[in-house]
Amino acid sequence: MNLGVQPVFISSGDLIADRRHQWALDYLARGDPAGAAEILEQVLETVPAFAGAWFALGTIREAEGDRARAIAAFVAARDADPQDHHGARLHLARLGVGEATPAMMETHVRRLFDQHAPRFDQSLLRHLDYRGPQLLVAAVAAVTLSAGRPLRFAAVLDLGCGTGLAGAAFRAAVDRLTGIDLSAAMIEETRRKALYDRLVTGELVDFLAAEAAAQMRYDLVVAADVLVYLQDLALVAAAVHRVLVPSGLFAFTTETHAGDGVLLRQSLRYAHGAAHVRATVAGAGLDLSYLAEVSTRTERGEPVPGLLGVATSC
Image 1 (tube, helix red, strand yellow):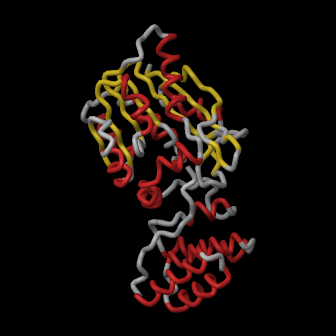
Image 2 (cartoon, one colour; image 1 turned 30 degrees about the horizontal axis):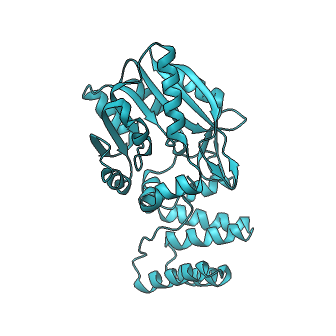
Image 3 (cartoon, one colour; image 1 turned 90 degrees about the vertical axis):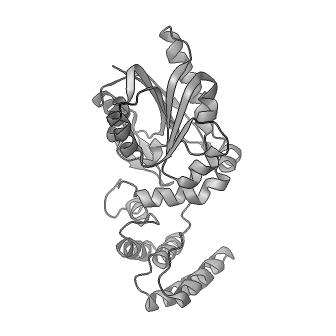
């Protein structure tokens, strides 16, 4: 989902500057970007290290088509906030500055999903026609059928479980369902649905490493609409392999593009080329038994190109 570029509020330490920053956002919400920019520039004269104000100013300048001043504002936001809560590095990459495909900062991803958790399901299902979980179930069923196996799993791990949409789709075929997500707010939304036997808040690769060390094993690992926020698929694929039982399955979706490698899209999500996905999965020691072009969502009336893969633990 395109979670937007709304500035997260982190106090500047100056109460008056904080209030004026909010006034600027109010001006922007009323359709007066020029007025908002003027207030933000005044705020930054007083508190030059106010990352939120720089980020908001950068979004205004970019919308105005002023690339040079947008870049300057995003650079200032990045430099003022090493944790990059606002995702300034991603905006700079999209504008051709710095790394072409920088990894998303954990703090940035967490705050985006915390911010959108209460309306996440509505945004995906009603506005984006999201269908990733249903496509994954159908693909996994096809793979298990071709192998002469029933669509039944003793233990399933849902990576980036969000509000539990994939868990709901697979629940009837699962004995023990575990979900992991970076966002505590998402986990709380999921907990209310009583779908999972175990829910964990944490970073995916760290969690997978801990599960492997504890000798926790899964028959199926699902990653529905989570790899689009990860630049490096190799780390995840290798970590998943270590928690799969022999002949266990890794089912995933990702967005894609016509070229090779990784591309940061205008939506600030990553698209992974098909050849890159094949090489990454094979490099992790998994057998990619199924890879198909799919679209799991629609944006601005157009299907977003994607891939759906099912790999088997060798």
